Amino acid sequence: MIDFKELAKEYGTPLYVYDFDYMAAQYEALKEAFRGRKSIIAYAVKANSNLSVIKHFAELGSGADCVSIGEVRRAFLAGIPSYKIIFSGVGKSDDEIREAIERDILYINVESEAELGRVELISKELNCAARISIRVNPNIDPKTHPYIATGLHDNKFGVDLDAAKRMYIKANNSENLDPVGIHFHIGSQLTQLQPIREAAEIVADLVRSLQAIDIELKFFDIGGGLGIKYDDETTIEPYEYAQAILGTLTALDMTILCEPGRFLTANAGYFITKFLYEKQNGEKKFVVVDGAMNDFLRPSLYKAYHEIEALSDAEGEPRAVDIVGPVCESGDFFAKDYLLPPLEHGDILVIKSAGAYGFGMGSNYNTRGRSAEVAVENGKARLIRRRESFEDLIALETEYLED
Ligand SMILES: *Cc1c(COP(=O)(O)O)cnc(C)c1O
Figure (spheres, rainbow, N blue to C red):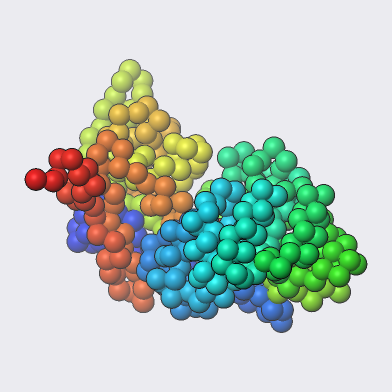
């Protein structure tokens, strides 16, 4: 058990704490599910992009799925080998494309015909053949929150099947493009297998139709999206997931690429915040804590549910409260009508499942420095990002700083 009170005392609050052993166990479970098949687990860096977290996965043999050149640079810094790094995203700039080609990553995941044109042009300038995959949008409803659904034609991601086929033919005929993979990612926090299976079937059929015209692809990239338990969701077991995917690949000898983010880190993370005050407006009770939406945005952005545990010695019956932060927005809350026991000033609240899309979505809104981050591994805690100071926050406002 992690001693959150002790960590709060040592590192201050608000604070992120990550259980590195849990992350490793999740990684191994997924890797094991694809055993007997060539596979690369490419950790989706955006879920938690702390360099120590990426390095932890690098040491386990993971690759990296990146959505900006900044994330690609992080992956390199953290020791992920170039041949396990992929670069996705609908809006890559010329500079980003150029750097990705120069760094010789595994492939660039192309998301539009226009982008394919840019990649070809830049690759020609560099006198090489850029390895690419094409992100197919299979028009499947993933049955998740609309903000994290990505595999419907209503969403901005990927290209439809006809466009994908045209693009593969173009790439195959180009001296400066080397199509090596095919990709789909229909959404995040997926808890049902059927949409994934349907999407994989559609994409596998496309692979077969490309084979028929002598376009051979090596990588079958199934994206990420595996859901986790925040509350009482039923989730997909890694083994079932792998079987569903492999079942669509009959007679196709391809390397599976899988890009989990949330699955690897969400339930390894805890957001620790301190109780400040209680107040009552009419019938409504508020518990005010020192963490806020700028530290941990998911409840505000998605109305996401997170289990919250109060480490309190006060006696008394639990009551329903709204747990809110100091930021000047009514949307600044962690939970509404949540049952908490009575609290005393300085008590610690532990917000669970905060290891994915937590720190990374943080901001400096209200001139609040971002939290510190701590890793716990083999029972030992260490600081992996120090708390931001006021000086950090103003460091780029040069008009005031010069002279
Ligand atoms: C965000 C993202 C992922 C990771 O999604 P999770 O739901 O965290 O597993 C994987 N691939 C791509 C292309 C993404 O954009």
